[in-house]
Amino acid sequence: MTVVRTPLVVGNWKMNGSFEANRALIEALLIALAQKTAPDVGVCPPFPYLPQVGALLAGTNVRWGAQTVCEHRTGAYTGQVSASMLRDLGCTYAIVGHSERRQFCGETDEQVSLQAVAALDSGLTPIICVGESAEEEAAGKTLAVIDRQLAPVLATLAGVADEGKGVVIAYEPVWAIGTGKTPTPEGVQAVHAHIRERLMAAGLVQTRILYGGSVKGSNAATLFALPDVDGGLIGGAALDALDFSTICTAAAIRAV
Ligand code: PEP
Image (cartoon, rainbow, N blue to C red; front, top):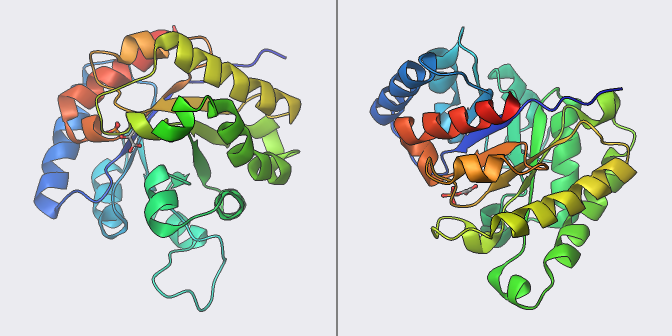
């Protein structure tokens, strides 16, 4: 069977936005994307803005999603948001295990894998983030860290439907997030090839692997041309409609 992995670009807005700014950003983005060939595209605003963003994007090709999701289905989890609630809001995606959640909210590898399962069970596509810190990279531990983070995910997702088509992995070196630094293209490809090997061994041949960490319009084409990079998870540049649409085009060109 031929495996076709449609490129995907997802914007992580983090804790940014306002009704006014969101409207301006989405309107500008839709205009910019209308003039270009786009891959699969999604944006992940903060929870309170999901209804607004969903309404602005309804009827377009751009999907929306959340920046995290609770691993529990329902109950006494004050402040948490479940996957079924996100589905009610029309979400397609749920980012899980972003390094800022791991760092600031103490999320563990096991918890992240349960969040991914909760997302999948509600029909959401989890975007599962993995990546090493600067210290781990300097100590040559990148692949070991990735393996540790992926292990519970692969154990829980092995045998999932459609050979993992509804699952996305994002490789995001922590030291590249918001810093303007990126690994060399060879470095990115080496980690993605390693992740691909692990996914293939678990039967997840359709799973897309995004790169995230200081992707901009100026470096997206180089990164997305790498054989095991299926698109990007974009932070800062997702708040600039032109830059984000340029990144989307770079992913679309890769698809041709
Ligand atoms: C991110 O936070 O997921 C991210 C990739 O951020 P940035 O693009 O700003 O490095």
